Length: 387
Ligand code: PLP
Image (cartoon, rainbow, N blue to C red; front, side, top):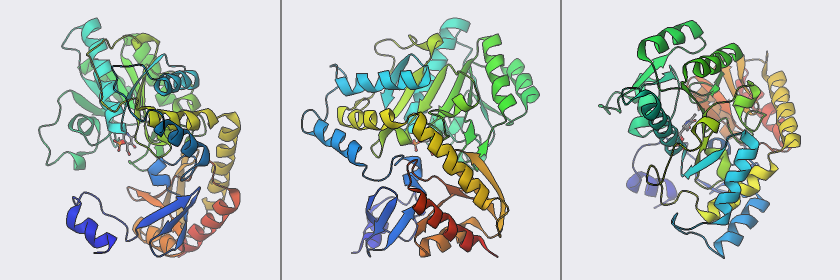
């Protein structure tokens, strides 16, 4: 059997895969089983932040694999502690819990917020307001948090205690908060799966002020926006706010699974022994690799990300067949006149990998994509978008 047949026979049918089997890559180039080369503007959905098989990341992971690839959380291990320190320095948060995915990170922030609210405001204070059109993951609780009905239909009953507010409608959100007396408000600063839609700065700032005033926990989901993707280490820094809890994953691991719950000053000690845990959370090999990634997401790289972002916006805004361009940093959604699926297929044929988000074409290139490759890929995209 070839790869496609093997997969279709034995792998659960949860993904609508593109007709390509990728077998290797380096940096922003990927290769399929026929030897065809692609410029990668998807980064494994914002995971390969510093490109595929980054040398420093591989060296850090393989060194750790040769010493202690795994130990349980019953023992201290340096990579996990070092990574937590680095993340606190980058974020202004105070403590970190490690899991293995974005959804698991969101489960963690939800548990932390509920425990804080139960202790502070009583056990009836558990409702979390999230936004319509949001995406927070695929577990039953993070699906409940996700404000898109299409994901809910056949999986009832979901975890209770989630209500959804309209994005960018601060008065509406305040009225809802008055009614439900929430434990927390949870947002993505840029709705990723929802179509790459940045929230308005006044709305995000208004949420921060409301949360401070009413002792509501402010949660920012940085699973996709985090780790340099937005042009700042975290997207909330672009908006000039300081949340109480942050979840992140994807780009943090450089290609290996990891998720993190970042606890700010107010909630730094909310978890005690036994409150939460994960067998693989804080895995030494994954954390050693993540340290090598986080260290390099510095001011110089962020300036470069913002420059590349401006380049993409300026090339695509007003281009033939392009209706609009939205996003932040290297997380960009392009509304095209032709259906997004046709653009993806057209680009793929010409050796460029792009993604979709709702009705848009989504671009998530590696943060360090070399400029000549980016220029070549954007030229292909423009050509394919032409009517
Ligand atoms: N939150 C956001 C904002 C996401 O974009 C995603 C995944 O796309 C998730 C959570 C879920 O992450 P994971 O697929 O790692 O569980």
